[in-house]
Length: 252
Image (cartoon, rainbow, N blue to C red; front, side, top):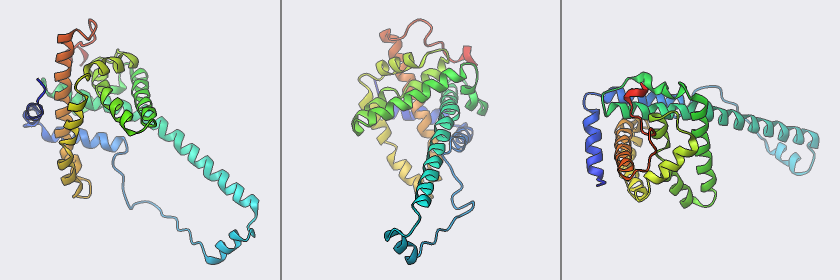
């Protein structure tokens, strides 16, 4: 039976004597995926727009070709930034997330290492990167139908990175299908589980946001316990095909 208190207690047990390694994994994952930025550093460009400039613009005294050129450059820069962002998400963020999930799944069984953060870059790298990217893309498209459908789909597919972390050979389509089946009847439980961490995250945010990183190991360990619970139920119900849950030992 689903119990938030049990999941969280199990997570605390896993983190005993292992917290700082889990913290390092979460910190590295955040840095590598752009979760942290060096705010206030780097060069700054100051644009001084005077009243004369605005008057000339309003009166049409500025060369239209200059305006068109500025718009063109801005559009190209925006398109370039979009392409770079999508490529970064595809090649880096998805595999890192799989590796992070792999670390926490192994930690609850027999311990793991920081190196498992890069597990997603091994073997079926491109296939799993595509699976994560498409899952995020489909979730975003569902969100365009209003917020609630996007939330529902994000919960339905929340087990995809765990499934790929355990079974890198699983296709993205099958991972989404199995995740949807595993979360059937537990989407609300997962939603409430997420809400239960709001207080911790608010406390962490008080320390300029850095404190959230200290909460992250507890959150991730709890979600790993949730996956273990849903996985056990899936096996009991016969939702998985033979070999789809190979366990972690064979994949090290």
